[in-house]
Structures are given as C-alpha cells and as structure tokens.
Image (cartoon, rainbow, N blue to C red; front, side, top):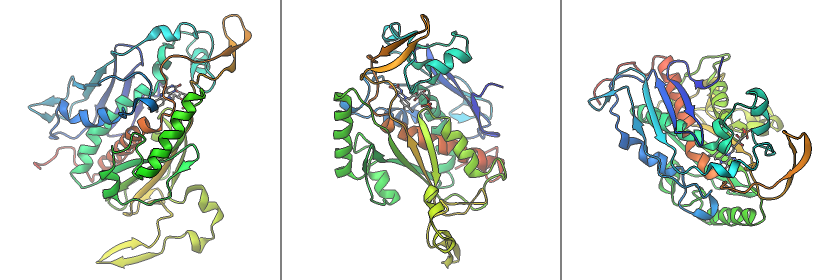
Length: 367
Ligand SMILES: Cc1cc2nc3c(=O)[nH]c(=O)nc-3n(C[C@H](O)[C@H](O)[C@H](O)COP(=O)(O)O)c2cc1C
C-alpha cells in the first residue's frame, strides 16, 4: 500500500512534487463546524521561508493556499478538505545535468530503483522538502482544532551544527520570538551565531543540520492507543516522514539510558488539586499515553544533501564512477524551514488521537 497518508480518524494525504503543478493535501475526518478560510493558512506558509536570504535557498515563492473542497459558508462540512498551493518558482533545468548522477544523501538513487526511473527527479520530486507545504496546511487545520481546547504546539531551533542554546524557554518566550530570528532560535544571541555558521558552511560549499525541540502544552491525560498506536509511536512515525529527520527523542530521550531509576522517574506531586510531576524526563508520555505534562520532543535534522562541494557518485546511465557538485538552489541548512513542518506534524498527530479517543467530537459546537 502506498504510504502517502498519516492518521486514522484525521487522515492527512499529501500529493504533488517539487516541480509539478501543485503541492497539496487532503484532510479527511476533520470535524464539521470549524471556521476555516484561505487566509488562515498564510501565517504558517509564510513562516516556512525565513526572511534572511543568506541562509535559505534562492527558491523563494509566496505560497498561497487554495481550498478546493470541504468548506461551506466558512465552516468545515465534515467532508474531505482538499488544499493546494501552486508551484511557480521552478527552475527545472538545474536537474537535467545531474539526472543520471544521484546526489549522495538524497533520494535520487533509491527512488530511481524503486520507481524504475519513472520518478519525477526534478528538485527531488516527491522527496523534496517542498512537500512540507502540504504538512503545514494540514497542520494549520489541526492547530485550529487543538486551539479550541487551549492545546498549543510550539517548535524552535535548539541547535545548528555544534552551535546550541542551553536555555530553557517558557512558552511565551518561544511565542514572542517565534519569527524574530531567521534561524528560528528564540535565544537571539545564539541565533546570530547559528546564522554565521550557516553562512560560512554555504561559502565552503557545505551544509549543516541541527535539532528542533517541539513542546505541546495542555494535552489532556490518557490520550494514545497502546501498544502500536501509542502516542509516542505515532508521533515518531509521523515525524520520521518529514524529509531529513534522522532522530526523534521524548523527554530525556537517549540520556535516560544513562540514568538510574530514581534519577529518571518523574516523581508525582499534587498542586492545586492537579497531579503533576516534579521533573519531565518522560516527555509528557507514560505507557504511550499523554500524562498531562508538556509533551517534549527533540528532532534531529541532517545536513542538506545537495552541496556544492565535490563528492563521489556513480553515473547510473554509463555505470561509471563519477563526481558531482550540486549547483542550483538549495538550503544550506533546512532546519529553519523544518520548524513549522515539525510543529504541523505534531499537531496533526495530536488532533488525530484526540478525535480517536472521543475527546474531540466529530461535530463541533459553536465556539
Ligand atoms: C524544509 C525542507 C527543505 C529541504 N530542502 C532541501 C534542499 O534544498 N536540498 C536538498 O538536497 N535537500 C533538502 N531537503 C532534504 C531532502 O528532502 C531529504 O534529505 C531527502 O528527501 C532524503 O530523505 P532523507 O533525508 O529523509 O533520507 C529539505 C528538507 C526539508 C524538511
């Protein structure tokens, strides 16, 4: 079965390629009665492209969402919502020269074998970071649904290469500085250093990766479907679908393996009649169910595969060893653009589980 969909009740199916006509998404199972307009998508779509041209690819296009179905009189109807944005800024000639030279680190080789060479290789086709536009549109709907229950999902850049902020941010600090730095790091001094290392990497024909932290606040207790649709399992599955994601950790993550039980366990405490924990090593999920504490996820993003520095590859037409230096327009670091995509992916998964659990009704009441 093709793997273009995620979710069981809030089902998100993406379509489109980087250099095709459109990138789009169908959201099936969105509760009826949610106010939704094309303008709702603009802020998140704009946020995908940081304003600083030195740290992103030259492909800067204003993405404008079109709603094709599922909305009537400004409200969702309960029918599938189809959304699309047009691809305007394509420069497909960049890819003719490297058609037979798979870029190391990219999907060119594996996709060519899987699809017998029929895949649209232009701009990475279906594997382009541009598919995150689809996730962002579906995520916007998910966030609107979560917002009705004061559930907020916030992501920011924690590190780029070896430059890392050690600060712990409050939700309002993340919100306040959400778009203040092009690197999407709320620690503005650190954000400047991040920008510098990205610019230097690009000058050297190199690229960088980094870590995005994502926090979901106010999730009710007990949401998730263990064992295999456990909340953490579904979040990880969805997040690994985002191109360039190479690791997902919850709470203490891999560090938990080095701790003792008493160090790692989050002791419970009662505060104003609510059961809380004094530490947050579990990342807000116990037994695959939300614990009511903030869900804390860290996502590792690899360095952009397409780099100007010469690398070895194989010419798949002549079957000879070859060299490749990728020209064209590429992000020297995809982390800033991935921040809203990670937020969206987490929001989509949480909305799906809230509907599955019955916490969120399929027909919304006036709000
Ligand atoms: C927002 C975003 C933008 C991206 N931009 C580029 C890019 O400009 N050049 C590139 O080679 N890869 C880019 N990528 C990464 C590739 O899409 C990805 O590495 C590739 O499909 C291989 O998949 P994998 O890294 O998950 O194995 C981007 C990824 C994201 C999330």
